[in-house]
Length: 507
Image 1 (cartoon, rainbow, N blue to C red):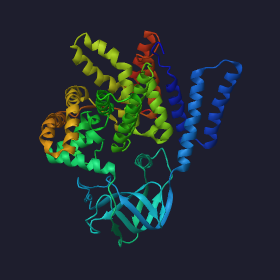
Image 2 (image 1 turned 30 degrees about the vertical axis):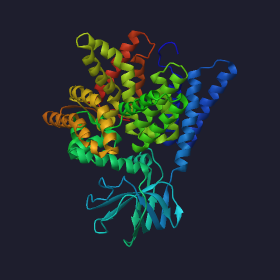
Image 3 (image 1 turned 60 degrees about the horizontal axis):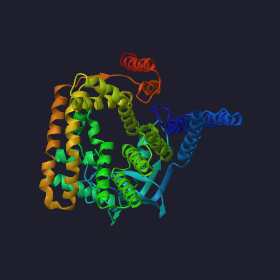
Image 4 (image 1 turned 180 degrees about the horizontal axis):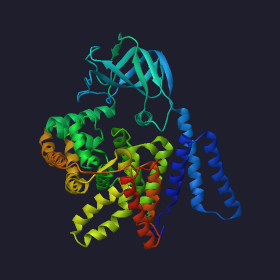
């Protein structure tokens, strides 16, 4: 790979997988089969005639793999109904406090149950259960709830939000109690839950409630404890990405651990195994969110490149990670977190350099680079922000320019202080001091949200995304197209955005 271009082999495979998954989920079975067979036959003809186009072959292979993965996933998706004696363990995804005690919400208890059994037989997946407030108030995470009732699950549908959320979190069933004569038996809290509770307690003991909840969301990507007012302030200023675990968070943790292992001269193979364990463990703490998994895979590709003395390429790593994640979890293709994570990364690696070069002509270099990161990430995110939220706050760039550098600068100290305080509670003062910049960052964002709520609104259909991103790829720094073509593609991207703002395009 001697020159930069958009034609990386893993990207063609990832594109084929995406098309195959979409076909399997939204087209009739015969249409999906016909499409897959057609591409495979054309690829075979290319091999026979000696006129092989590797991009087409890779795309066809990805199409076949994606269609198979999606079909298999839909076929094995837990569904159906069960009735009888049901038991399940209360997880920390239930509404609970930092001590693992279930708390009231909307007049009742919202519980998530895993380790499900019906009439003594195990059932794959989790279930949600709502109990009225008068049932009982001493339920704890880790305990087993036993009752007579039913579990109801629906078949997977990529076009339904509830189905996608159920697939993402493994909550396939809705539990119902036929009578409230149920019992609780002792259980145990998992290692992941213990760590999360310990960190949350350390934060609450040493920071005010708002700051502690924000930091918990920032470390684990769990926004369930954030108040609506704080969450809305960050959404209205385009800074909600701060409480979504990103590549920055994962990279800081990984490279800090790697530096420690290098310091003690750990053998590379053993160090790589430990690094993998750390990334898997952190991914589990973050509920295996798509953005964390994307970052973890790309980091591991980077490490493997160094071990094999190969040149690391971000687009290649992105294609590999996307392919692996989509084959393992086809529903990720329709997950907002997955799409926005890759959109932001592609925007940064594909457009930051030209944007930065323009800004450096009139601004101080560090300032220009900071603005360029914000602009380029939003270029990659723009269609998905319109698609999922219908708006892009105009305060995004100025607010991010202040908040993001502040957060990034102090996050390593904050993470270290959180770990130390969790292990050694006597060091709580260290965490209190480290959280001060976060406290003022939250106050600033809340003030900015009150001053201005001006936003760019648009109706961005999925069809426009199909046009936008190929054009953005041609206009990016990775394209080998002539500069004139790049400028035309960039202009067309802008035209698409303008059209979305003033014209409703049917899907």
